[in-house]
Image 1 (cartoon, rainbow, N blue to C red):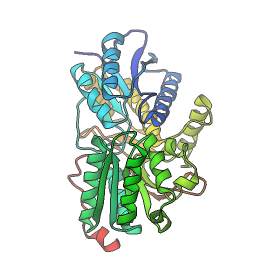
Image 2: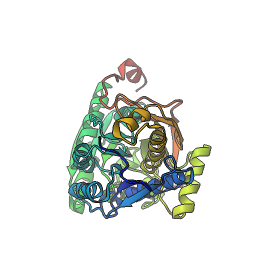
Image 3: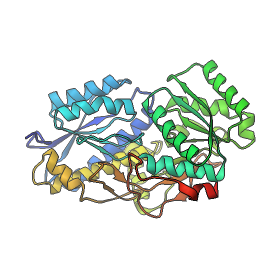
Image 4: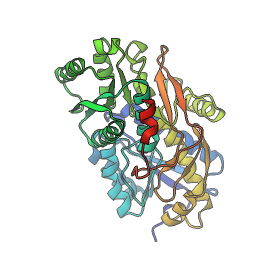
Length: 383
């Protein structure tokens, strides 16, 4: 039996976040939140007296870079618990590594769903916890004509497939769909904006990520479509992106996430204070960072209660533990390995900050395969 702890004096855990990827800004915030949580766990006695020992290697921008780092952490540093990756193709590159070594990956980022691994815990939002509430809000308040723009990789294609199903279920229409390579040319981006201007959608649903997000907002800012009320909406754009814009580019933008940095409950305030004290006032606080933070605490609770520091024992306890996260109380669904989360809709205001305009009254059970969801007549009657 492979143990998740390979040392006597500490419990090594790995961080898989890149400082050079397309999404390095949010990955930096996730790495910082992971380190903050590790500090808190160790201050509370670690895992039954053993401190968590963070192990981190430089990770390049490509999926194979994450895979190679995971292999080195496991094979050379004895790490069997990993926190991280951000983009879906990086997660998929790492999964065979943890599965072949009886290790455990905690993945703190929203994603497209339709996946299960015995060796992965998914703490970011599943489609029913972000795509569904965002589609419902857009259809009710902004219109039925949507244009898709995304980077050309797995999350964008799969997220757009889900959003298309939701819009068409409510008699909406996808008027255009374009995928651009990461770092596409200005001319390519201008061509997409010209299509948007010609088609006049009510909503631009963006699965563009990282630095390309700022370029998209800059290109859209002065358009006639925006002046006439069209909005950009996304699941992937967050406070790390807003920090690289101002309200002239971002105001009116809509996002769905379990947590926004403007939430004022005590746990949220404590998380913000801890992050700023540890990493400075300029640290971007994102929903991905919040998930990276609470997943360490969920793991620590389960590891403390497990009979052995082994995969099956820790997984069994993960189904029982609860944690008062910045977004609200969270827990792991044993059947899917996904997390019960609190869906919210945020709109960027004139201060370039998310204002929460819809707030779940209770955590929502994850449905990564969307097998039970249907808008039905409820949405159509309100659209």
